[in-house]
Amino acid sequence: MYLMRTFTGVLLLVFQQCSGINYFFFFGTSIFVRIIDDAYLVPIFFAGINLLFSILASAYVDRFKRTTLLKVGSVALGSIIGIFAIIKLLDFNNTATNASMIILSCLFIAIFAFTWGPVAGIVVSELFPPAIKVKAMSISGCSGWMAGFLVATVTPMISNYIGFAFMVIMGLAAFFVKKYVPETRNLQINELDDVYRKFQRN
Image (cartoon, rainbow, N blue to C red; front, side, top):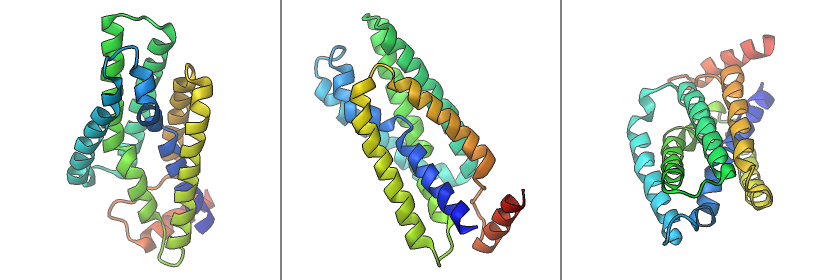
């Protein structure tokens, strides 16, 4: 039962880091250097959007089911990064497409900051009983950071196609959440134990 929970925590944080968010934060300057004169301001602008929607998430996230936010976030993020990747691949260098890339990037960051950004961590923190919480969260967190490192390493090698990879990953994330992630909001640990016993029987 604990192994399944740990596996769930690991995959949630791996999906979070492989959602595409690091693509914009790590490589935002190089992505938009041809579009914006002061491309070095892009990370600052992105950080501002991330901060604003993270604050909104802290105020409102408990009004929604965790799994609903993760599923909606997966579909929305996958769709946005897929459209972004198509536009980038076609390389139409005109005002309309350049503006659409900027808008899509901002929308992606805003949705991430309200869904996968905070909610993945919240669910992971709610999954584990005190007996294994420290170890299980450490394993999950380490896995997430390793995934982030992998994204940062691989992205420059396949930058024109990486958006499609993120789109597929978000599709897998939506399936994983729907199939294997229990709703943890307002659940006590003993109630979550019962949920995982049912998972194991099925």
